[in-house]
Length: 105
Image 1 (tube, rainbow, N blue to C red):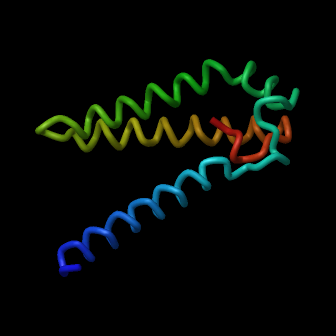
Image 2: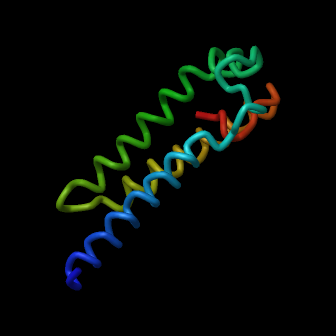
């Protein structure tokens, strides 16, 4: 085989291996977390529904700000501060319900 074919095969194997490693890491909580079936997780999700939606909208707003040609750093700092506060509140609620960190959305 020539050099280009060897490089192509090695690159394909690298991409395949990387994809498999990424896919295996997607369920990092494992069976012990039981994020979908645990009652405490469901209670946490019900009580924090609005706060989680707010955190998601703040994250989207930050991403939108970064997409503009003229980045408003003051606005981004303000949004990041609000997002950090929302995530801290979510983490506090998760601890209140004994929800594992990997289940916190």
